[in-house]
Image 1 (cartoon, rainbow, N blue to C red):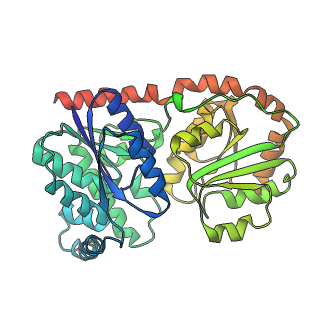
Image 2 (cartoon, rainbow, N blue to C red; image 1 turned 90 degrees about the vertical axis):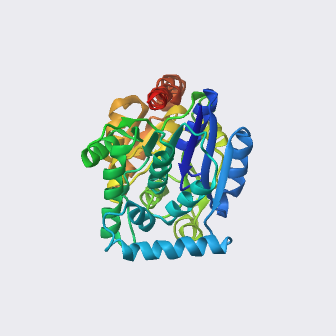
Image 3 (cartoon, rainbow, N blue to C red; image 1 turned 45 degrees about the vertical axis):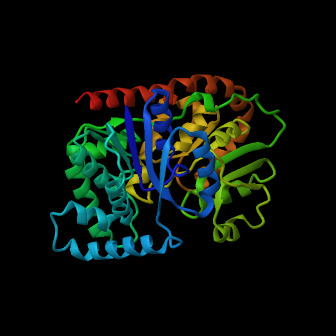
Length: 403
């Protein structure tokens, strides 16, 4: 079987895609991936991924100004489409192009490539949805869509009202035509069902258990080691609440932040905070191996950012759990529900500094028992590993391919 994956991102910023590639290869499927060359800090990580999957056909598409003609064409068409969608309200092509200029780049590349051997096309990210639909229609094959984020509920900084309408139209019309739809959290699945009136299967953001290693508990007299990771260390990620709370306990803790550091954020919030250590972005494998060296994993989502943040379950909360860490999570709707199912694995805090001070004080006072339970947490987390979640995808793929 030949699977075609489409994304408007790259591998470094799309762990769900990486896991699906791994699964397809384990099933001895042939795999082709169309993705974007985003340059910047991900170049080294992309090279590692492509070396990890030598049997996969990767087609990287240009989108930055270094490929000026492609960048200019897609940018101009995107600008035109935003004006034209007032006239062509029923055109899904115009809506897709106005929503994301990468849709056009994907759409055009698919028309150029000879991919008539593809059996199933799978879209990741909303910008890949229309190209996947058109490609599937052209070759009369099934297609699936993964809703990693609830796109109409994300922060939209430009042309927000119209963009929400575009995203809603694309999802409501095209998900009805998909052979299957998956979502990255139970609450995102509920929102998509409500909006689009389609069945949605939750495939949680867990990882293969083989990526993690158990680690012996730290000595009780060592400082408590906290860790947080993301693609970018930046404003609006909950760190503004955490750092003032940790200042009170700076002589008892070490905080490691892993990701691409925003210099302005560093100057504003990290200057003089000597208990903070910064590490550059890591490959998924290296990151997961390293997590076991810490005590506390920080899942600091802010529910007021947007609806999506309130209902999403990030990669990090699963990574912390699978590494055996004790989780400190903010009280978004999704994280409250998750932590209610794993009450012994962590603690939930309100989204303010004083609440964090109280919780950190509790953690410091109970660190010995938290560390003593680390191996138990690690062992129990095997039950939610991606090996289990993957079976949902296997079933969906097999059903789609039989139609």
